Length: 85
Image (cartoon, rainbow, N blue to C red; front, top):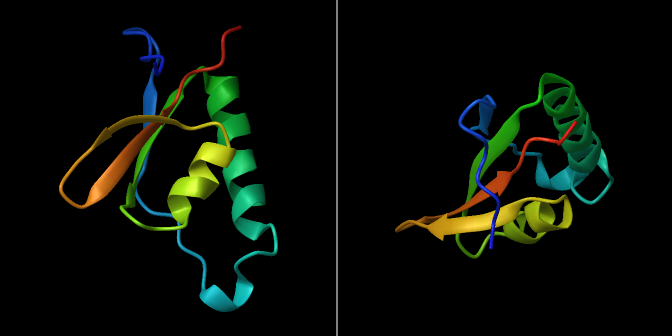
């Protein structure tokens, strides 16, 4: 079961992360997401985001530590809890 962010912890929302198909699969998105996660960890923040159903992004976000929270009509939603410090 996904961990919910603490009421005291800030929560960041990643609206969209898109890469042109010609540069996908080269580690660029992973590097960007890793940097964002590092900054969120420093701030003690959780990160929430959504991805279109059936999108390869769902596998990408799960691989980077995001936990499924729920589905909407078009999107699947995820949470990366704040780092415990």
